[in-house]
Length: 170
Image (tube, rainbow, N blue to C red; front, side):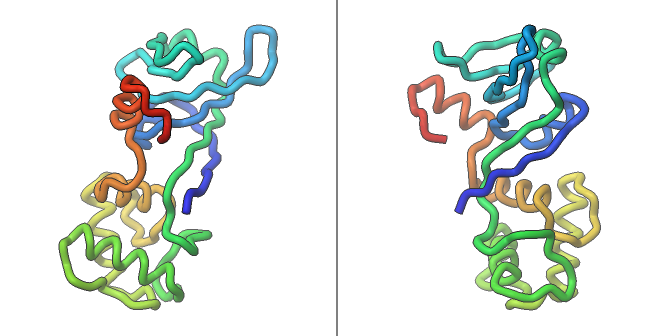
């Protein structure tokens, strides 16, 4: 039930919105490919995992080596393959509706296996509340934010705490 997402970003701010550990594609000074597990960022510093444990490093020192590409693991609903929108059908719609019901502490979701207008309205409200594009489409960013609100997955703070305490499973 874990998926790997790959994408590119232009700035550190683009990465901060994920609030989760990310694998950054880097190049060494000698132009060899490398990867870094970025656990967290704050102001102008990054916390990365090294063989010696967590290390704080200046973002300015990492910037010239970062290719802009990143990856992360996350927990999508079990048959999620693409953004889900009004009129879409299937078990994934019911799973998304159930996640919103859980968030709202409701006994059942606003939709069954058909993405209806009630679910679309709830999605738009959620997206506006968390500064996402309020298009009513449930894509990766909406699901990541929903997961974060429900405590699904590992946030940057969780990862930092676990790694500092010797817990290596993220």
